[in-house]
Length: 134
Ligand code: HEC
Ligand code: HEC
Ligand code: HEC
Ligand code: HEC
Ligand code: HEC
Image 1 (cartoon, protein in one colour):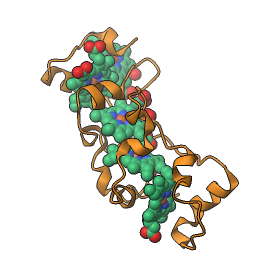
Image 2 (spheres, protein in one colour; image 1 turned 180 degrees about the vertical axis):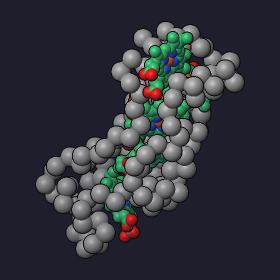
Image 3 (cartoon, helix red, strand yellow; image 1 turned 45 degrees about the horizontal axis):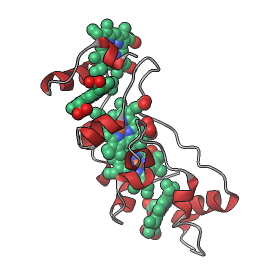
Image 4 (tube, helix red, strand yellow; image 1 turned 60 degrees about the vertical axis):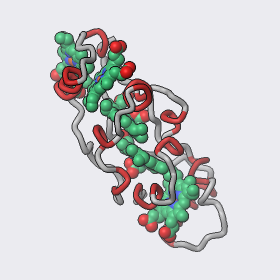
């Protein structure tokens, strides 16, 4: 599906409205469940650009989103720590999503151990192996 972040963020929706783990203070941000899309895309609308999402909604079939950002199983990462407590801007790790019009196909900022540790050094956060490898 040609999902368009810019169009939806321009409506005034917060990231945590769809990535509900952010609003709920969980480690995972999460990808949006169908009910969130259904709250706006289940009406009688004739818009050809939203036809694909209305079809999923009317069949009640979850949209198979592809996850792009992941860390390996041996690494612990928490959005609550980084976006919640430390109040880091999403853009530091995910690029300029409010202006992104195409689906995310590759990470805007690559995830690597060096990058995690560089920022931890700069901000005086732990570099203990066992903080990240639990
Ligand atoms: C708060 C209401 C709202 C929610 C929630 C919402 N949308 Fe939309 N969506 C809109 C509006 C308004 C448009 C603009 C329609 C247009 O420009 O023709 C739109 C446009 C779209 C389009 C067409 C994009 C384009 O470039 O023209 C797609 C596809 C879409 N939405 C999918 C989704 C999906 C998938 C979800 C759930 C993750 C979702 N929407 C959640 C209101 C919403
Ligand atoms: C310090 C870097 C960093 C910041 C800041 C950050 N993220 Fe992430 N994000 C990540 C990493 C790393 C992953 C992969 C996590 C995993 O595999 O568990 C990820 C994964 C995601 C995913 C994929 C789904 C998921 O649950 O893993 C979404 C969506 C996401 N982030 C949204 C956000 C939003 C929205 C914000 C701001 C409120 C944000 N992120 C802030 C690093 C960050
Ligand atoms: C209306 C719902 C909606 C809003 C609001 C929204 N997103 Fe998303 N986001 C999605 C959907 C749907 C996907 C999966 C499709 C895609 O990757 O384009 C996604 C994917 C992502 C991903 C890629 C995750 C992965 O690993 O595949 C990131 C990062 C992300 N969003 C960040 C943000 C940030 C940052 C904000 C706020 C500035 C935001 N999103 C606001 C619906 C939303
Ligand atoms: C842009 C800066 C930045 C990046 C990039 C970053 N972090 Fe962090 N990290 C922080 C900050 C700031 C904190 C302290 C948060 C708080 O106040 O609790 C933190 C805290 C943590 C903690 C908790 C540490 C403790 O004391 O228990 C873990 C675990 C962690 N980060 C893992 C990661 C991993 C894994 C990555 C890479 C995938 C990463 N971080 C990338 C800034 C960053
Ligand atoms: C701030 C978080 C963080 C800290 C601290 C950290 N790592 Fe990592 N480490 C990561 C991430 C994220 C990856 C996965 C990178 C990737 O997928 O490219 C990783 C990957 C690895 C790997 C696998 C390398 C590979 O090629 O797959 C090893 C081994 C490793 N770390 C060992 C260590 C050791 C030893 C320490 C302590 C000296 C340490 N790490 C400290 C975040 C961290």
